[in-house]
Image 1 (cartoon, rainbow, N blue to C red):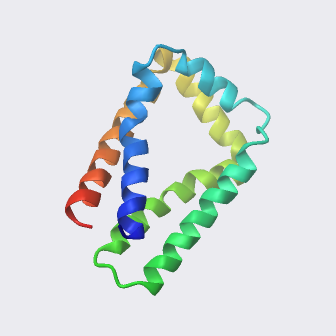
Image 2: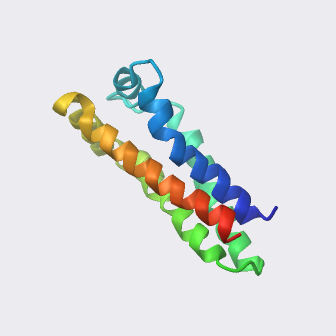
Image 3: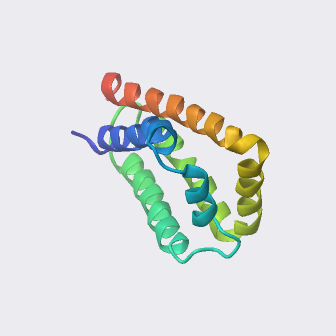
Length: 133
């Protein structure tokens, strides 16, 4: 299995399953999100974001050094995760305020809709992994 198929399957399944593990399992996801993104940036963010950015850089390296058809698609889609990572590193306060606002409005319905969109996006990535790579 090539790197891009593996990445697409892992990345796609994580995104596809997000609505299920965040909202269908019996737990309070809003309390979890409020604690995960509290006002003071948690210590876990820097190492996790650093790892994620290194993985994005490695993906670009693999794209540039291998000849796998359509690998640019997964490379670009996976690179979108860097936007959130860079926001968490450099504009954490704005991200935290945005999450807190969504949690307060309509009991977090916007987060549910965002996660449904993430699930659809993940499903498309999984289909790419299966049928393109």
